Length: 268
Length: 312
Image (cartoon, rainbow over all chains, first blue to last red; front, side):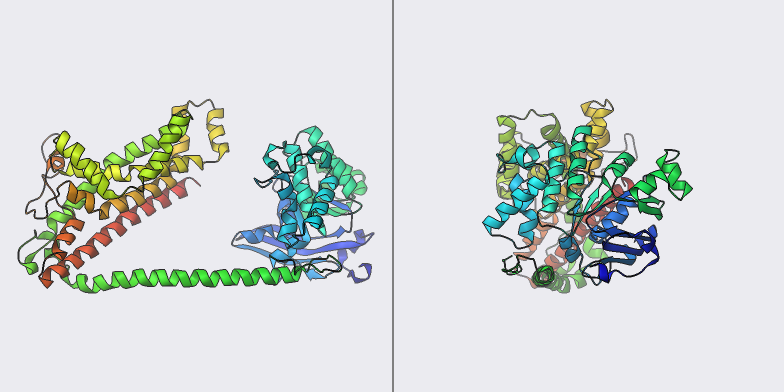
């Protein structure tokens, strides 16, 4: 896929294969513009963190990446998000949102398992895709639960309700649910904000384990978390992309003073 | 969905095929839904149009201000529409407070045990009991045992009984669907049950409760069977005493003890006459009844809209 990557101004920060390219993306909630000309690359099989103060548009940006905004009327995208290797603009009105969501998985802020057995939760994404063969589904469910580091805790109670799990387990279940169909990219919207420190630590470990095999974009308001688990970091402020770079660079020698101020805790 | 979207060799999923299939499915359902909608609306529209054609030319100021008469061309529905208005007021004044209070009690106060479970099942089932049964109950209880007579009050009580289950169920559903967060926010402030219910939960549930009230009142306004059973008169050439007066205390409730008739009964009566003139008058009454129902619903929808807007 390297060959198909176009040359864009943001290429200054590209140092590996890219899974998607966000190019001049603007987004409007009705009349209100929430994203302004955002551009950055999403590196293949690396974790990219989106950080910034509340209301900076980081969740809006993440939700745009699998067209969640299309569920509500009056929302509008401008610009492009090119997904490789297909080279399709996933925010184009001509591209069916469903197609985008089949390729890109999402984990939400609050654990949101279905009121169904654990097994059914993980298998949901497979069933939606028409995968019904029991042997395949069994195998993929087990694999996804192992990937999400949940298998040992739930293997004896797969038929019991997902609501019986703790908050941290539920969130790992949601990650397993998103991983089961083997998505091209995994989006996580502050996945640990509703969890205690121990559960948070488990999810962070999990991210580190997943990063070499899955492309991850994670929104977090916890800067230590961004520093621990991501290879690249984008800092956003009032709907604009202020700075994008390697995580180590952002946290040690940021170019922008606003980034510096936010990271050192002077605002936000 | 079948497995044809999965490539048997590579196990890869053909996403485009899935999307195409989903779109086709959506389109099919949309078409079916639209056809059903058109059929239903056309039937309803034809029905309404039919009696509008018959009845609308008959409606005039005199039709609304004349009492019923033996001569079809002079007959009017003054006593019927006044009767309907008063009976509906009595029904609303009884059914809404009792229904909402019962719903609040069952949902928020009553202990959850087998007894309340049985009550819940019975309340739900009562909504499906044929209205003539309520008429017979009212005849036996209100008219014969309590000797309340054949009055507007009894009609209001009977119709209130009829629509109580609807309002109770709607109130419970409305309270139950309030997000847990709202409930916890109220109790978290240290509110007692009464404060939580009246200051936060009931206002949050108001749109749902109002929907129940609309459904109930719309049912009550068209009821004929129980009203006949408890002895509404078909020929009334006088009005009940006015509810407002110019001497202290300015309101009076004598109208509650007055005999009455209502529009569905007037219609029923006229339709069973042989003269064609009365059939036209019945159609005209139907148009007025329908307009009153629409007016009532329109008002309730407007109130609900205002509530929703103010709570956002």
